[in-house]
Image (cartoon, rainbow, N blue to C red; front, side, top):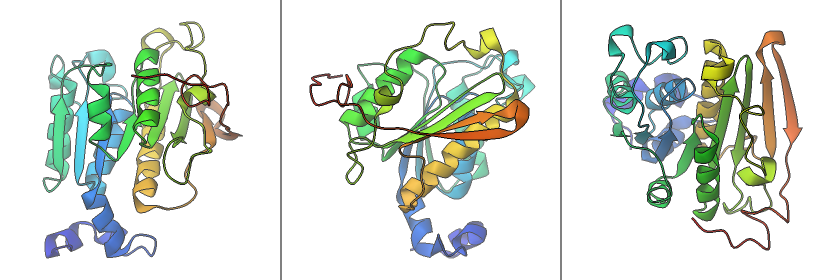
Length: 259
């Protein structure tokens, strides 16, 4: 039950018919894993903390560089050289001290991914490398957790939700159904190679936070079975319907893939 402090803090969202006190209680009970505290992770972390997600775990093994500051708005100039996960957790706690924020300053890998994913209700992919994305996608499927995916480079972004092994969504695609082959550097250049505009990363992260809240509340209309493409130069949004693949190496009928 919400206390008086909760009612004051979350008043503007709890009065919404789609939220109410019951919805706010769901947010406070939720456990979310945020993988990556960079350009898209920064707004995700702040918006989820502000909304009252009860437990947020941030994992990122990187330190802050000055070249990060054009888009990673959770950090300041004098933070350069410090741990991203530690300062991201500190910023989230400063915004909302009533939620529990954990930080891990090591890399997600095949040895720790299963435990981390199963300990949370929803996983948010804010990473910037293909290997981690595929590892996270496979694990989310195998552990029956929703995966909220987001990516951004230059002035383009992508957002989707994958629930391929979640009850009620078993016909939906997994990450590998939509992205079956790991791209090379030319197909998916990093921000350090291709560049990135801060507001584009912020837009992607904001949409990921929104999708996460909708999933926790059980609201319809998430980006499950849909890939949203954002073209910032022309302020254009395009949606692609996504489907599962029977020959998928992760969720296909013949799959024997294990983490």
